[in-house]
Image 1 (cartoon, rainbow, N blue to C red):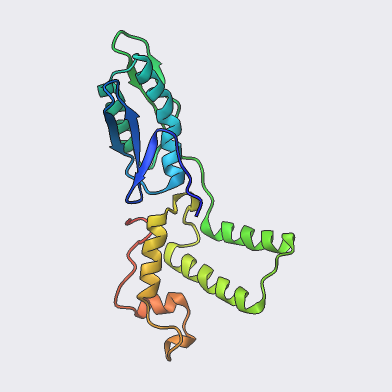
Image 2: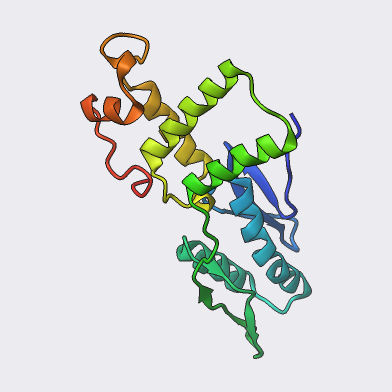
Length: 197
């Protein structure tokens, strides 16, 4: 398995951390609170210039720590590049910008199917049925309008756990039901699962 790595970071138990070596050879480590490579890489891209400023001595360790804390508090909001306010303390200010990336799950699945057809990589009948069942489950649980840019490994793990807990689709009367119908008769209700992560 080819592991992807990021500069100034490491993984512990699947969670990404930022790591900077201090002048006294001690490491400064801080959790990025994500197990997603994409999210961690976006954060590292924002943090790296500030790490370089810290190494040059124009930003204090406390300033770097505060910057990372503020960045993690922003959560669902992407941050623009940092605006540096010149002063002898090297104060760093950032301004949040609302995330404009959006692609609905329903649209992305439609585009994916079309891509496979256009590329000439059609599925055999058995694979097509299996894929359709997977797509149906995703759409039933997350909804057609769910933003694919918000799907993380955690979301998918929880979706898979929930699907495994549904009544067995091979046994009557469930074998004649859709995923949505099995969700309605299941004891575990799927309460706004996509937003309640």
